[in-house]
Image: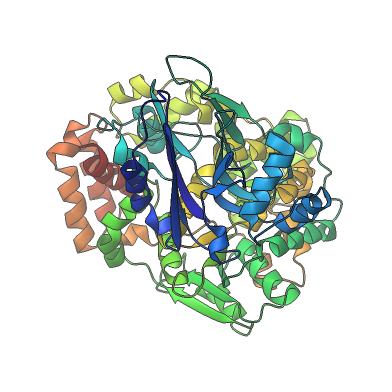
Length: 617
């Protein structure tokens, strides 16, 4: 787990400055406090900072070079099946000098070429430079667990594991991408395309690679981007799970691989089904009696407090650690939190995770987390809307009526029915409805940026539950992974996500929808597989959804009231030409008077405005 960066100039006479590479490395030193290295070859410069996880010796130093000096690699991530790949390569005559997964990846690429990507089980972003052929190959993992950002001009390519290192050496002042701002405000989504909040910076999409040829004589730098991983075709050819026990074996295998480490491993434990399943398997199946878990707890008056579920693990081996994010701590951490993410986040939930990672960093170097389970097992409440639409499209009216009845009986909510009707609307109507619901975006801003939209056109247009789940992997999951990467790496931690073992994902998504949602309950496959493993009170929970915070009350505190009024009345906020300022002020009054809970919108305004001030103004 590390940070990588680099500069590639098209002009071979324009030598990359080592000071530029080191400047980029310094901005992301939190990603790799244990070691660092650079490589400069005229117009190509590479940088690396290391967080030591496997083989803690200097043998893991990067940039990693072939014996003859032809190939140079910088790599961020972990290849969890490196032991199995190493055994294969040894049979092919390869010798190894280290115990690192870095050397395994390096030799695997030399042996199998670009097709090696399909053999890797892990999370990664890497660059391999062939000094003889003068080509550079960049690749990112299937689901976007590890980041890769780049800025492309006619003359050069700048890349890094985070955006700030790129901004550090940009020759121009960054400008905002208002299409991304629009999607952030309207849909609460940010990672559904290659765009970022900065017009000058793109990201390599998950499951994609880049081939850069510097040998060809050309005036402008151009890149070839290839989608090497197609989740749709993989799911179509995957073998569905035939039983809960079948699923359980695959889940345990995913965890087993992610326990490979030469440093202490802990679990981010929320008290929900996903993290509880990981915690139980780690302790009971793999006998990790020294396991540390890390959780966020709140005052018992907050409905989102999970401590009563966490206490069900008090008699388990290991140690439980707790942190209590608060209105005061968020205010104290605000500037650092904004710097940590470098782009706005649409909820304070990542802040709860931020505090958990801060706590974990004092005890372990690696954490396991339940990210990705909701996307493959329909964990979000609105998935009922997709499932109802699925049953309607198939003409399964008896099943539809039964599932709606079960849903209403168990959840005592009409939210699933509202999303069902919303997903049936034409795509243009869906977007207009979302904008009008908010009521605070100016009509001019909405008209300029309410164009063809991936979220409305693909994510919300899914015609079946399986299609919706697949589209969530394509267009929604990555923003959660980005937040986890920033939160963990800010505190020099590696976060691993067992639910995103590609073998588990593909087979789960290939399984019949009625095994995912059944009798008004989501995550049926996981729930059934965890019988006798997870405490029953947690296994059958229906009220858990991510890291929630008491943000409604936070933003009614005196300190936050002053902070928010200062922002809403500021000249800079008014000058954005994004918000109907009078409406935002009226909404804040409604929130303070407890007429409505509008903290989600308030937070988006706060973070967006402070982001503008920090990075744009």
